[in-house]
Length: 336
Image 1 (cartoon, helix red, strand yellow):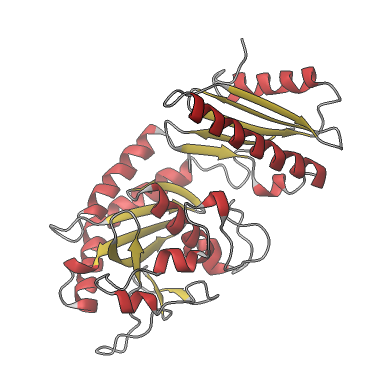
Image 2 (spheres, one colour):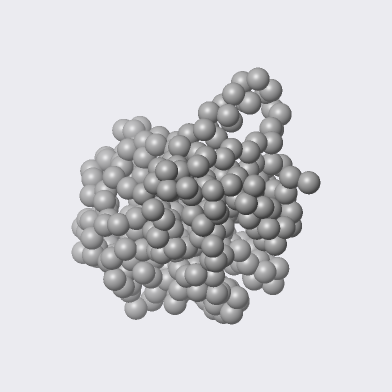
């Protein structure tokens, strides 16, 4: 998630209010991305993960312009329809099934269930009005224009029209309840027009604020460290740029994988032994190449780190973590 200043956050909140009220009395949902980073979402955590993943792969400016690897953490290497599984989602399996498939009891069940190739390459285009369009969902018979995509939200169990809009590096995704639109594509077009009329100036301001404070792809790089910082209380995360993470040796990555397993195991034990009580935790693993993989968890915050140049002593590695904590985390992970 993108870290932003107070002024930018106020502008974003103002924009979100306009987006969520675009369909009149019906409540809409929205998601905002800057480059490949999450700025805002009004969706549930599970629906956010699914839609954000799809947006990074197919809707972001980078995905539309190049069709090659994104620098987001959502994917590594070539694109695959099976790009998320296991702990990344509540339910494993291809995103195309999780986002777009619903039970036959849904209002547009047949329409959603027939969509099986939502991850096709090169199928999204930016229209003259800034909205992204695709023919993956078919063509509206009455007007012969591309049908507006529909998705199924897990949290509300509701079918929604998917309306992505893009301005420079800013991508807005508006989700409109299908049940609130009585005349199909014509009704969706009216909502889009209302969005442009009411939100254009706010979109411009948000893009300017975020661009002004943007440090680029390597904005969160810290020399000598490869890290992932998660603040569960504020629902934000920060990490080393993927380009830097790919420099890690295979042995270091294996140690990091083992570290995550150990942390998950300890979390399960703590939850079982002390229901509702969070436990501070530190786990350190030395890799075969003498790198250190370290995890510290405290007060709702988690820090995962790989140090390949930390000598052979745990004391040196621990000191490096302390310095990182004091400088970039206000001492949240310090042992003192």
